[in-house]
Length: 313
Image (cartoon, rainbow, N blue to C red; front, side, top):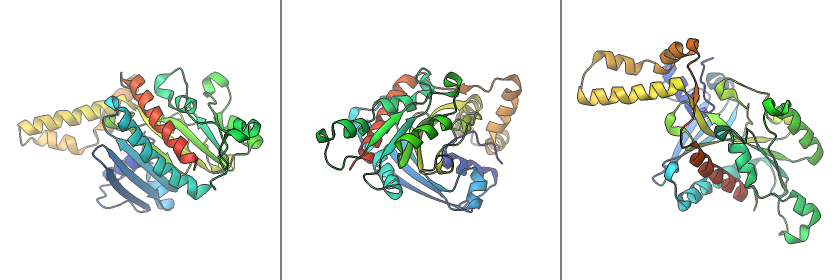
């Protein structure tokens, strides 16, 4: 299988098409795109069968990618607008999986003390938790309020326990009908760092995008549906070099209309070429932007608000 090194189904589909010179859609995959205003694009990748699964290495199901421009300098109104898009797309998936009053467990994966990996725990801090209130003070909530609980299970390196093992124990005891997992993802595009949200109804394999896959969190392993929400927070050094080379080639071609060498280089897979040079020297680092604190703060607000409005009536 092609080494995608990205968690985003949309990027995997694009990379597969490029690698195999496919102009139309990949067999077993459907894709749609919708523009919402000037700054938001919603792309939907639906994997229909085994052909689609084998092509891009993702499970059969629905993958929604929400691209948000200018999030580094987003105003409160822009953050709210983005969260409303998340609410709409997430609510549609939730309604297809459970009834309006079924209990939901929110899981924030990652390490709170490592900023690029802190998205999940940060989102959980802003979730409106209701399970304990419904149990001890039900009169203060509106009738029909959904039971919501949340947990940040930490990472294997600090707990010594696989996330799957922790969640199995929680599911057995509190018996939610649905799990929503939030995690930081890897991308093959600098532009998507902390400006893209992927929502999938197929669960997640934590760490898969950076080659550190853990046990999958899916309906097969947990016994209930799992929705995965993720935001890319890092890329490989090879991706940065390849994207920078693209910009360099574009600039040169604008100034010199014809150059056989540059035209040929642009058509080849620069990422794989650069990775071959960097990897043997252990120079293919995982890189995150210097503004990651602000980006994580903005994106965690977008995701948390989107979830809060989607899980209640």
